[in-house]
Length: 185
Image (cartoon, rainbow, N blue to C red):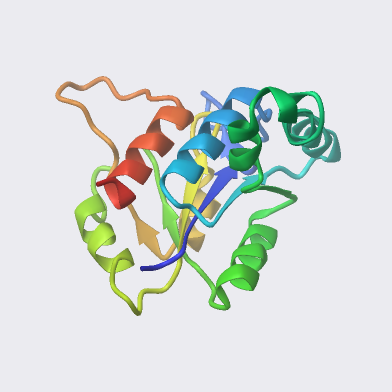
């Protein structure tokens, strides 16, 4: 079974007008995606942000739960947050994953705006092969990743769709669905 990684991208992402921006790290994203990642056997969850102040914010949130008093309050939260690595850019996340797996991960681009892409069933089949290369799910914040991130990907995953036209899941919800489709029983 291949190692699975998650990279939550905060830059470069687009805003509602299509302008390339950086988005803010939220404690909800850190907690919820870390907990889903731990549940589904993700090897590491990378939080990607270029601004030192945002990386410091993430470190403070995680330190509360890794150290006293949060550690004493809920050890399961600490266990999940131990998967989190806050890095400056996607290249740092790739290097971190490569250090853990000894192989460069294939990058899987995700977006609600894609018309089509590789199915989760097909990727699940691939990652469950004994000789499979590791995969890093790239998750966008804001209004999605900038086109340059799509250009870096090895795989484009099909969007998550419900029965109707509405498609505006939080990144936390989308991450959980993706991980369940790839690793759920």
